[in-house]
Image (cartoon, rainbow, N blue to C red):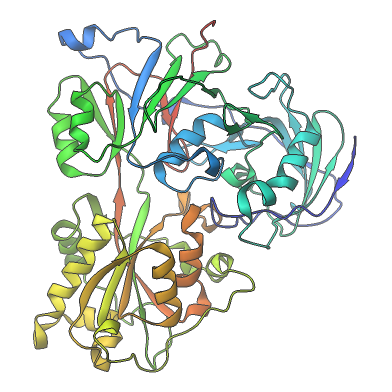
Length: 503
């Protein structure tokens, strides 16, 4: 059923809009997919302890302890890190990006683009199929994208893909609204390929794992089984059991038999390092905590003078209970195009006036409720402002409202919707919020996920807020030694490699 499908409104809830496109009718430039190298494999050697010896060769199943609840209704656009890890095993995009920024084949075996990057041609890999065995054809890709507005709830009208033309069963042509010759844009989770049917309660996917029905399984447990062989690996994982958090200390999950977990908690990581059968591997720096504040009569932008390095270092060590460092550039939101891409079309974004209201409520430093790192930073800022005349000059510059008589600051945790409203209306002295770092420094690859509305209320130029980066934070993978079939992708998400088991 060849022919154009137009328009295709894309949602951008899983990641900030990627700059993908351009125009022109020049002869397509062939793109040779790069060969995958083992640079992204996590080295988790086998333990020599008796307990480790019992796990050598690996059984069919690995247990992963999650930090957040996972809702199948969100798939494939993740709303938290745990969903991102689960969905990454289930769904595929045309291409994928590894930990070193290389673009590798996904559902597409090859691709090409014209001289300016407006027109792209993709050829799907031979034999690609959904979990139910139905083939993944070019028209299914186009239809899945066209229906994503209804299935996942569009929050954006920018539409980076202008139209799609089906050329054959395995070939499709994609016209982009904005030029780019970077194929990494097609790796956004929002462009995951899905089918029109449901499978075990999930939207149909084509990933290397598929969900399994587990009668009598505890609430929140998700079991995935390998849906196809992975290049003949004999050290892969046949099935994965993801267990939802139970509000207890994550260290208990390791004691209870979990094989894998991701954590930034220093106590959990120290405990894991002391266990002979576990290894701890740092993941890429994933988020930068920033403070956003009204600028009064000044022009918005970074502070006139940089924050002293020793001040940021003390903040990272004294206020953050996680693996942290002083924030390091590049910062994608300082690129005008990147900042504007986060804004929400059609939504009025307010700005701060020349002064801040002087009520106690407006002296708040607010942060996302439940974010311990943001809370620690906010509390440290309040402690520093409590020094009165000795308030550090850099902090007075970062928070101009201190000079506007906003009162003695207090901290307050707010849900995402309330935080966005406060940011838009100028109802706080400052907002401390985590901003996902753009992998490899390119703004199109910033993974905003469900936080896009919040980011649109804070990061886009229309808010008039001054954004000051403070600290970078990363998590670490804790895994039982001997699991050699785990990689990390370009977004820092663990990727499990399957071993198909006849069932």
